[in-house]
Length: 282
Image (cartoon, rainbow, N blue to C red; front, side):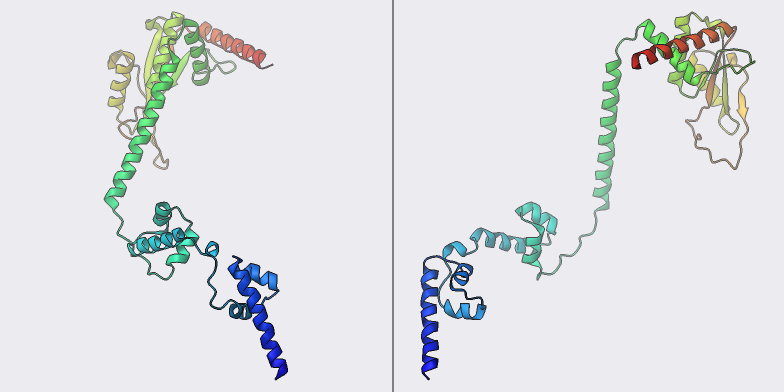
């Protein structure tokens, strides 16, 4: 009986110390460490009836966020929308609303999505066009020397080269009308008379040959009758061609008569450009 009384007296003393510490503003953890009481049941009994200090209470703002998150979830909002609206983490939102039913998925508005995609495509097209226009304006006037060098590089990349023992002749073939126009401007710069130029179309036989001939004749400013005989490439049904449709017009072949010396000069001009470029990088 005496032992039980001593035990009760020890607990009351410990409780008195715990209550005193609690009323000075200590938290449960601080009291636990101070009294060396690590049993939660005993600690609960020691602090029974004593409210926690205000500083340990969860701020009301957090409660308001929780209540608002639950309200939005009940309205069918997703975690992402709630996060953007409240500025809190998804993990907190999940903890607050995990007992609520999942919102039903709303049917996807395909028409709105299609319009959104179309707007994005149009915006990208406008941005690309603006970039091209800006780059075009950056070129400015081209001098005669600049056109000369452009023409040399253009011919050496796209024009016919002489093979050993073959007859030299300036021949330029391309499917791009702009490339053809630059090449003809270069011939004008070199003083190559229009009478020395011969044009012909190279195209697959399955294409619209008359339409292609009319197109190229218009591009270089001659009559269709002035074109040489069109060179037709036989169609192989096993080949999966991509150059088809109304925009396929084949290639225009531009040949310069009596151009062996011009071809040799082009070779020399290109060699000179290579030497100059090598010296700049040395």
